[in-house]
Image 1 (tube, one colour):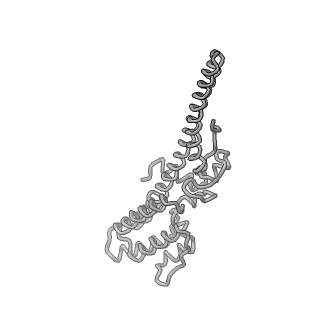
Image 2: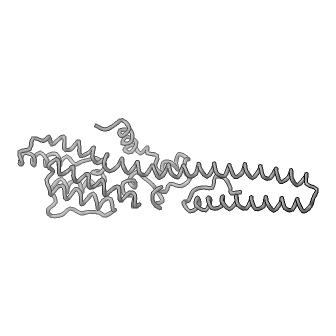
Image 3: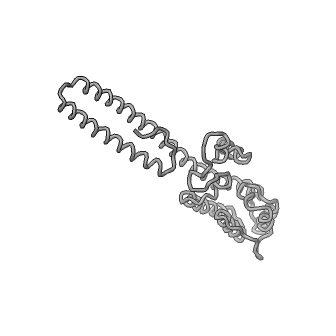
Length: 249
């Protein structure tokens, strides 16, 4: 059974309402629609599963291992398992796989339909008959219809959902950096305003020129130190491509 939150995600994914880069730009929430995990300029729903970032590929390989174990545990024909795993891996890398001479009929028909449909749980109906015949052949008491329904669930829970959660971690980490930048620069501005008032006060109330000069030099050093720290922070911010919410002091 899928959880209510998973069902909401799947519904948004299928209907095109996920808060991906392309949609966020349309809503005016983002300025650029690029992927938060890689330099891909236009993040759409199809890119999430095929993102070439290191984090995405590590997660995808882990999902493939779990998927392979499940296919074996439910007595999937070995030739069907091999084709499903190989084509899914090629599809995720952006490589088109043509049908082979020894490809089972469901694989050939699914490739004609499009493997993108397979990864989204739109399974060709020939799979059901193929699995039914196989279970009869090996005298299995497993339900072929259950194989289909669980396969669809596995495709979403093993591949789509983990990638979406991983992608969102990158989005929220960037949000936290932006929030921290705003807070940090707010502190710098407040401290600098406080120091500026102190400078004016001391300069106005000190009649000794030498003493006024010393006070000025002290505060200049403090200002320089604070400005240097702020610039370092903004250098990091610019390297990761975040907007400058508050100009450095």
